[in-house]
Image (cartoon, rainbow, N blue to C red; front, top):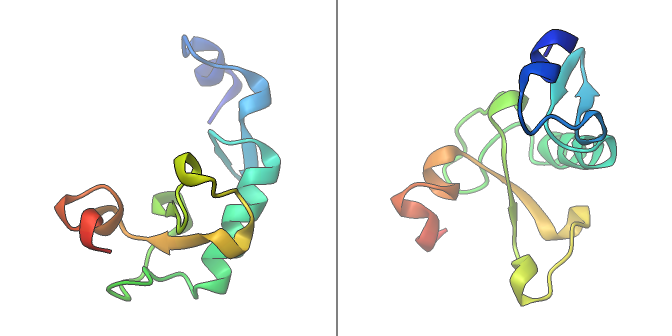
Length: 93
């Protein structure tokens, strides 16, 4: 994301962006690194259906939801595809 694009966003806060492999993401740098490590640990695949997922399309999922007391440690995160994380099958994953 270019600087001009970042400044044009109403919600843009430079502290909320992180960069991995030359790309920028709307997470803090520590979260981007954590998600990157989880994505690599899960071999770049959805843990439910095993489909390959590029990092830019990764859906980090909390095994124990944060609302239930879960945290952002890598042990509590897993890689899911869009279908299993946000789609109709997400409730069954």
